[in-house]
Length: 521
Image (cartoon, rainbow, N blue to C red):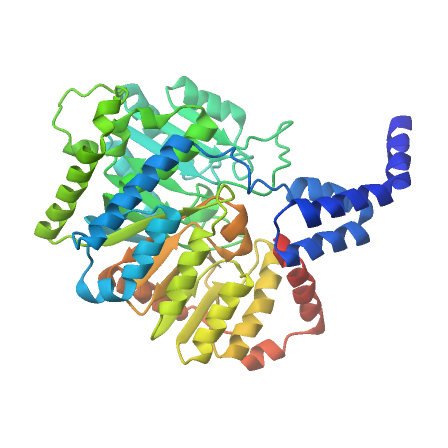
């Protein structure tokens, strides 16, 4: 007790100097948005003691750190992007003519800035219900022959994991390689003994930013929010569903859980596998890029008795000529088969100075000519995104935003509501989803191009979390997603200007207080 009093007295005595030092660090030594800088300075001033600890927990800055980077892999991915840019210039790579004309520059931008290779021979299945998504996932896991790679932000020791785990253990016993990557914050409620049980069954597990001192995790920012499953390099899943009973609609607090998940069959699954491998290499301390077998569709391989542990790829197998010939052949095959469903897997995170997913959204908004439909559980945009949507709405484009009617994070919800007011004033139409909780994260533009995945329409997803989205250049898929969106509208209540203006004084206070903290949310 005496020590605690001594520490407290020391903090109070030196508080001015501590705040001064932190202020200097925030202003001069970290590249932050000016609004975030002022927010932190206000917190340090008005909450002097606890503000110091809030800063330590919430304001760690890894943007310039190389802790997540694997240089040789980045170089190889950049080389693939440069090769595909060459194909575009030679007119070997193209989409259907209208899409190529209108979105070719977006494809090239994502190639150059995000290293996102465009794959063409893909098929997509859309899941808007958790029961259906996990039933399909369990079926595909049971059919795996070579490897299963699973990555989720949240994994809980309850449904649906109670059904998935026995399948994974059976598959591991058969010799299928199974790896599970989970986030240390999102999956903090999973008992360690459960992970030990899985490891004893032959399943490899890894934790991204593991907790410190039991379940205490001081790294609130920079969480791995990606949800990826890749099976045998032939099937990939990406979207909003995590692993817990609420995602099946079985949590009374939220009721029905409305989300969107994509099942991709084709070469885009390999792009998802690359994203998984980059995260696994960091968290699992195992370089999957030494095994080239993981980065091809195993069902295409002719070797019947392929070893379960792939041999390291030899340097002579990675020569540029061979890679270019293979990719060109795949593109020509895609033309002959007529499968030109183009997908770019776009990842972003604090390991990059670019905001790839945010910038991809901005490009889509600027290119819209008729309508923009958005679904997101959290709408806390930066100035660029908010301005783009307001300009679009003011230009006569049909901008519609759908968000939940209930909060799972109250501050974020009330900040969302304050930004909704600006959109409504600009002429956009905003809707609250009333049939449970809306967790779908995506954008649809002009019934032609869509982008769905793990990223919310907020600053945290744009800058602070590791996210992954699929940008889909296909009218049929986008129209299917838009039909689901329009069906959801029947379960929504529109936030008109009259409804927004009628909110109570207490709601207005909560809005403005939460919006003040929006750079930190």
